[in-house]
Length: 161
Image (cartoon, rainbow, N blue to C red):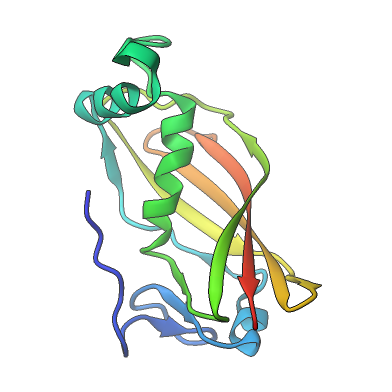
């Protein structure tokens, strides 16, 4: 699924009403966003075609791995990257790198045919030489369930020089 990234003038700056993704241009914008939940974003359907394409790309031989009526947990986690584009746009610094995950849990399975959406919250950035390490708490909700399908803490390294 192709998602259009916001262009200049689109989205919201920290501290303003969200009419689109929160656009973070400065360290002050980032500090203003810390602790504020963004989202939820739009619902996204998790159907059999999406699961088949994911398994074909990630499973040797494209075989089926796991119960056939459930989406793989790794697919749910992988959706957070594209779903996050609806919630925030880090433009701070000269480059932004995926530094990895500090944690990922999957309290509730996602059943085929259901819909998911993302909420996220920026944590306090940690200073590194020439960079900031930005924790982002991600929560994937699955329609009709009381518990989240995924809770993860993503780490983004923002290069400042």
